[in-house]
Length: 300
Ligand code: CP
Ligand code: NVA
Image (cartoon, rainbow, N blue to C red):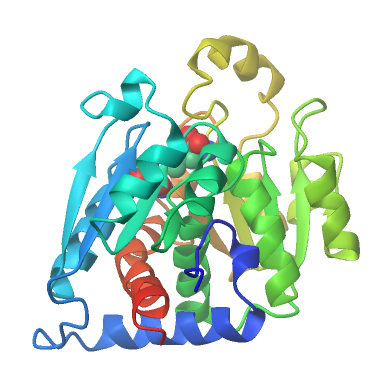
């Protein structure tokens, strides 16, 4: 039987996603140290790019559940010396119970999954970051209830996070307002699949009108460091500042997947202000991914 993978948010149904989020909230509210559903199980974590939250949350989550996690970098494995992905996937999946990958190219994760005997989790690619969305949705649900029918404003780059927000809007039935500079829009096929749930706005204040949640991300993602200067010019009018938050609902939340650059995509008064829930959002990576591991490995 083919294992269940989590490469995109679209790999789960809306009922499954809601159940997973409610389970994450329950796991967070009551930690039973004797509950070890993954006792003896091993997760391989392959990181082609840096990470603080993703690595620690998966490693701690496996440990809480009685299992363990291996940190693998291409530098230290044969992957970095050109061993074919399909061979690596077959070998690694014959020895572990789950594989998480953070890669540059999205196709690396999909190829790995095709040849893996065990569940593969996308820990971020150039195209998507579904695990972060689990934490963002978890945070919204615990603070505001279901997100169905709400409005979310995405300000900034049409990047991996933006794509996963588009998927979330499709699955959970909310409206996504997007304001991004010309030339930095999300991929046309991903936008087209979302239909009327996604609307584009010419400026940040217009996008934030009536928003229940305002979200942004760095102007230059990992791997785009050489474009930093050019992006600073293109994105100069795309900062989430007090003016943008004032256009949203008075009780709107502010989220950012972190790491953040204060003074670039977000002003310090917003990210460190009362509407910001970025540290709760970061902590929820742990709880949401524990629920994901249960879902994929225990069939719950
Ligand atoms: N938000 C996020 O994925 O953080 P890391 O890059 O630290 O894992
Ligand atoms: N868009 C960012 C997210 C980091 C968690 C990046 O890909 O670098």
